[in-house]
Length: 482
Image (spheres, rainbow, N blue to C red):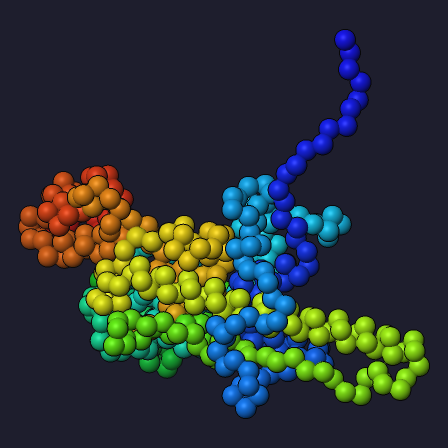
């Protein structure tokens, strides 16, 4: 029997992406600086909203983690479904025409994450650096060095002082500097003009003897003393050097950029100061986490005067009342959203610190594996919510101001068969073993595997080879001194 068309009812769970929900999630992923700008615009546009000048005098809560504003009943985990998928918090992209949809499962496709943001040179360099190595120590050193670049892109910091401040070996700081100098734009992180030019010529494959002589004697180049330059080049091994060779070498120098920070058009090399969202300090009971008040604006609702509600014509009064109610509702919503954002940030930060005690006690070598899912289960939020909380947030630590994402490290198996050592820490261990080896009898990958196993870390030989590649450590044959 042939069946005709039929109506079938079905039920499915969807997350309605209302404009308010979109804005609430947008608030969650904003950095402290972006949040200040956003709130400043809201206060300017909303007559029912003002900054809290004196919380104590007004009898208002003076901490962002205080009770939520009146009428605020929803929380981040209530907005997110318990399972990810097409209908979860990372489902279909929001469609203005549909009026309700979900976010993309791949958060890189999230409309919130696709908002145009001006990239900085520091961001660009750090992304390149993280592609080279995931060593926590090297990344920590690199972030500090990158932030220390001057407007031209030169690194003029005292590396010994940096090592003392970060409590890292000076050779680690120097390794981070060396890696930075291999990144784009060529010449970045040079310590002086000569090194900047040398790095650029090397990147172009033009650092020949005559060019090297010119770079090493910029005073003679400036005075166009070709005779002395030819003499020095000949003494360096280029016996056939003529004045034309010097002229060509100087022309190559002139094609270099003495200010590499401006080469890519990414704006000033000096970025805005990062405002930490949370502060970690040692207290009587151990490491304590608190919110940085400067990163969380405090707001109050107020009833505006002079809007013509009293004594006006009925239609005008109704219109004014409607406007005030709408603005007041928006103000209460924003205050509640900021309260929830602060609570979520504080909860996630405390969970991170609780999971990484050895890092705060002993430094980057002791970062342990941590996943978003682990933190999500600890704080009772959805994993995608935790991902948004840590996005663009920073923590002030004894080692400097670090992004929350830096505390989420992948791991390798310990001798007990559990994931107990961060991959970056293992790379640091490999680097130390190689530095301490006998140059005439360098360690093979198998020997490194055995030594790591003795330390309780189980790795395959191919994994050691992979980590050597990441650390730019040559193989045994190349390291042997004959």
